[in-house]
Length: 257
Image 1 (tube, rainbow, N blue to C red):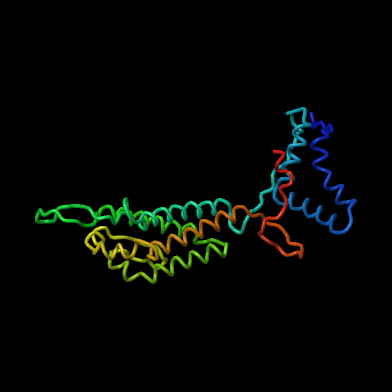
Image 2 (image 1 turned 60 degrees about the horizontal axis):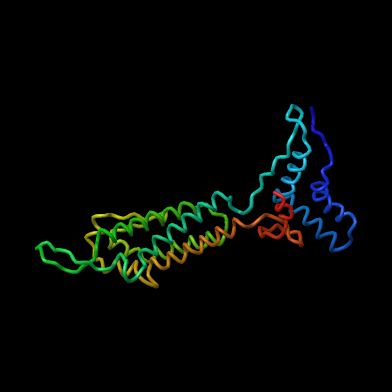
């Protein structure tokens, strides 16, 4: 049994109304309608409408039936999966950087009472707590570098490069804390060396506004922002005929699903 192509007035009118308008309109109005139709085909919503229309008029599940497959279209210079990984990584890095930046109660650099080697009670930094926070920062930093390594979006590449530049500018201070910068820009931290280092240096590097961690947090925020923005874009053509990644029209039919 084949498909029964009975007319469903609601979906048929939605599906073909814009094409009729394009054929009967003149000038800018007709061209706008045509571009709207094309954009809807580009982003897949037109295909979804076709699939919905024929599904409603199909009275058989036997052989001979067919369906419209949604076109596989890129929605950005980078895939949605890649952009999502960049977004998640950047948000994780911002969170771990902000944990180091935080001042006041709850700060990892808040001094505590502890005993020295002679058993005397002194006020000092919680080295274990600071190391755990820095280790998390290093892990998240490397994750962002990996996620953005092959990014095609220029704004993301720019912020990735800026992040590496800031790190390289602080390489000698990082080294004094047992934190090494590899040739690919990634970081690694030596636990023993870090815990034996001067925590006041660690505080100056990672704590407060303007610190290294603060600058990395800012770069991570920008990567997060641009990754989210790219996910909302759709490939289309501008009115001058140039290819653009800026979303404009084409979701005219999405409200019907």
